[in-house]
Structures are given as structure tokens and as C-alpha cells.
Image (cartoon, rainbow, N blue to C red; front, side, top):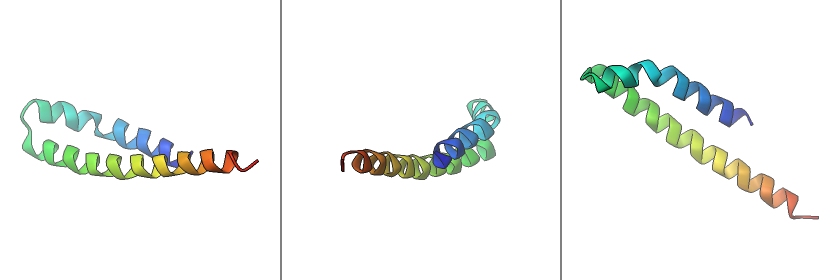
Length: 60
């Protein structure tokens, strides 16, 4: 599932900024919030794909 791989990539890329944000870096916090919006969007895509897989499997 391409969306799942993209989700893992986004999470991995933001790890350093999460640590910086925990230390009080405001710019890193802004980047983390932006990335979390991407995570939300990608997660919704994954949910939709899983539903489509489920529905396709119940046709038979």
C-alpha cells in the first residue's frame, strides 16, 4: 500500500523536529504541526483503501 509507505516516511522525517519541539523550538513545532496535517490526510486515504479492499473481497 503506497499510502502506508508514505505515512511511515512522513513520521520518520519529522522525528528530529519532534525532539526539537519538545525542547521548545517554535519553528520545529510549526513543522511538526504541518506534518501532522499530512499524517491525518494520509491516514484517511489508508482508511478508504482498506474499506475498498474489504468491499472488493465481499463481492464473491
